[in-house]
Image 1: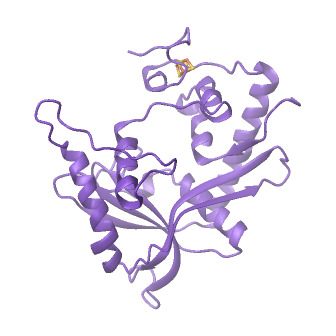
Image 2: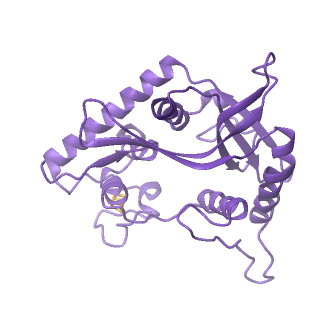
Image 3: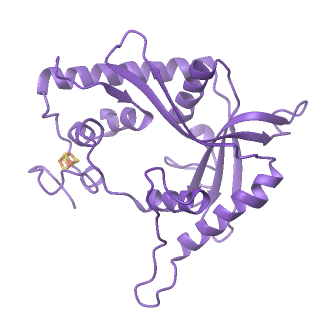
Amino acid sequence: MNSKPKITISQSLIKALDVHAGKCPAKAYAVFILGLEHGSSRAMELGNYFETVVYGATEDGSKIEPERNKKTNEILTPFRRVHKQAYRFMTEYAQNYKMDLSEPRVHLTAEIAGYPGYALRGRLDLVSSIYDDKNYPESPFIKKAIIDTKITGSITNTFGDFAWGNPSAMDHLQMDIYSMLYEIVNKQKVPCYYFVMDTSKEEGHLLVHKEVNQDDIRKAKKRIVLTISRIEDYFGNYGSEWPKAPNPKNCRGCPLSSTCTSAKLD
Ligand code: SF4
């Protein structure tokens, strides 16, 4: 146990260790403890391309080129639409929603009381002003809000992890942690929003207000503590050989897939 490194808890790690969702602990160890690169999904590539257009590069400094049709060399439609949405975000949307886009990529870290070997981390896309007369009719101009930008295939989808047509059905752990961290670090609670842009032919967008209440914070803290207890159990019982949960969803994009004897890729 003494050799256990200091561990940073993020919403991604919490979700990667959600064994009830069938996640593979060995993969989580490889990605979050060893820091190995995992493969990116199309959704992640589009998100990284959005960042490249808006900020000139992704957080790690890489510039993502749009994917092209191998025969015609034309830029694939989803990348073309993301490019358009990125420009609209910086111009038309920023103007219409009075976003000053003043603090992009805000990284926040806090100690976790009672767990000295752990820290909580959040990487916020943006802290900016915003105009919201729907939720704050008395005082619609908000000087500071947490804004998480999302690229999605549809803003009307009502099922699954990205049900932007029914956001109350989604898991908002990420935003709950952002809100909690922002308040710990800045001693101030600010409103939280998702700015969702789609790559459908409608090229729509949505501003979703996320109320983060005390119950949300309590549940987020519970998941953080549960994750720490899982990590302690895995280190204590398995050392660096955490249990495996092979299935194509886990194994595709796993950094261990070429060496793992349990890998199941189809
Ligand atoms: S290849 Fe599959 S089973 Fe092996 S560690 Fe990766 S996700 Fe787990």
